[in-house]
Amino acid sequence: RHKLDDNNREEEDELILEEKDEMFWLSVYKTTDEQYLLIDSQSTETSEIHFLHLASDTTNTTRGNNGNITTQKNNTFNKGDGKEISSSSSSLLKCVAKRRKKVLYNIDHRHGKWWIQSNVGGLPNYALFTAPAIENSETFWKLVVGREEDERRDTNNVNEKSFALFDGSNERSLDDVTCFDTHAVAIGRENGLPRIWFIGIDDNNDEMTEKAYSNSDDNTSKRNDYDATSIKATAVLASEFERLEFEEEAFDVELSGVNNNFYAKSVVVVYDSLVTPTQQISIKLDNLAHRTLLKEYDVPGYDKKLYSSKRIMVSSRDGMTQIPVDLVYRKDVMDEDFVVSLSSSSPSRNNDPQLHKPVPVHLYAYGAYGSCEEAEFGSSLLPLLDRGIIYAVAHVRGGGEMGRPWYEEPNGGKYLCKNNTFNDFVDVARWLVCDANITTSDMLSCEGRSAGGLTVGAAINQAPDLFRVAILGVPAVDVVASMADSSINLVVTEWEEWGNPNEVKYFEYMKGYSPMDNVRTNATYPSCLLTGGLHDPRVQFWEPAKFTATLRHATAIANDKEDRPICLKMEMSAGHFSASDRYKYWRELAFDYAFLLDQLGLFQK
Image (tube, rainbow, N blue to C red; front, side, top):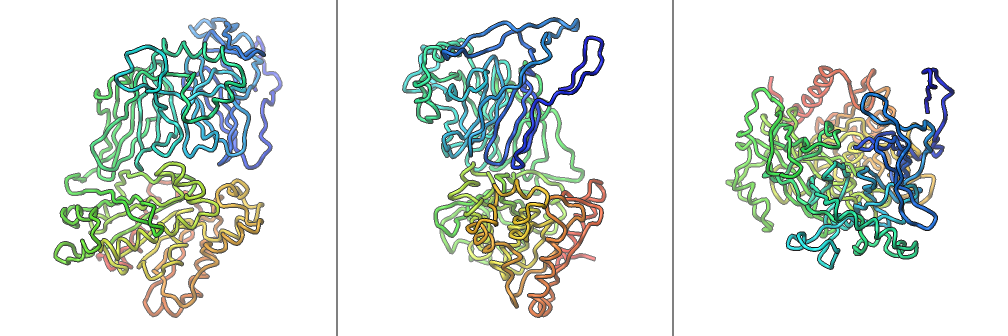
């Protein structure tokens, strides 16, 4: 804390929090209403948030020893510019909820309450709770509920027809909540797509919850804690709960970063799809049908009518998992009747050469950290699409496209189920070639960056004859060796993603998929382009270099015979995210595309 005395002279800085666990990182930000400064200490599996009251409002909610909730006026004064600030510069840092292993939570603040998203209690997805804005509030977390449409005009009493908006189940996932004066806006996922929900709040209904908290003893509170089916004594009863709808089959949507006014009556969302350039849209909080297009990204020469996209669900080898796959293409490349037939269950639906002639497909995936690859617009794809290539995005496990279970054990893509990521990628590739007959193995290329490079590296080891070209950008391909060395930057924090190979069970499992340790001798591999950055702090430059040498040694005879080069391109002045210079980035991308088109036989002089 940096202080100034009454004469604006600097006093000695005060250390208010230090995170000593190297598995955790710290971030500092304010609640949307600017009432609190939050310090978030978080690893990939556990979090703890401290708060500092900024005294922007005039009341403070506290909890007494008897568990009762009380409010009191803060000691504030007017600075002269209309803003009240705290008369005390020594506000204590307090904790919202102490860290508990494998419990994650995030918060915002609205009118004396925390709005909390958490997986507490081992929930598969985040649930939405509220609690009084006090320290150690975890015993007061209660689910936010709505009421069936025909019940909302009735009494304020919660009855059996109420439902939890986000109960942490598999039906829908919750990623974030932003609070406003009259509404809360939730961001999450449903059916593999990003979604935004608008939550209307009747503060008259909210009053009942203060009584519910005050009249409940600690034992009762704990009994109702984290029960996703319990809606008794809930913190907030939503008067509205409406999802923002769009016409396209697959898209990307999120809140814009400009929504910083707590008292706003509208919000700005960012929308795009595989064929629709990015749009900034203003939407009324109390009327979702009232939309105003503020701005649309201009793409010179782009004609949306020439392109189309399709979302397909592909069965994995386990027979139970459906993998979302997005395709984007020129309409003159794939006949619409053929595209419709891709959703058919008939195994011989696409064998008619009159219906579709195989075309090149470029398959992309990531599949790690619960990160989602969205169906978003990319003008950089147009050079490929205009040359007749279909671009496919496989939403493999390890990402978060289908909620946190898509990422977490036991059926996701991390720790001891990481092979699901690679199996999904290969299963999608086989579907493109063998089932849908969209392409052939001589026309199929693939790409992944960073952890996506690991996905591609493991996939070409598993099925080297399935791909003609592979691009591995800054690929994490020497997993066992890198994860075993805690002196390498960021490795310790990565143990909650891959496991620690210094433990036998993780060592054996990781060695079974690490690309460096599973290259097939004398097999015919696809042509490979591996890239790295000399100053990359995340994937050290020697990983792509070692994998290149290993591939060259193992495939020298087979790949030379088929004229399939294994190439390494090392950027001597770049880091993990390639060049920061926009024009240099385009030149690097052009190099990747030139390699791809040349190896597919599509290079035009």
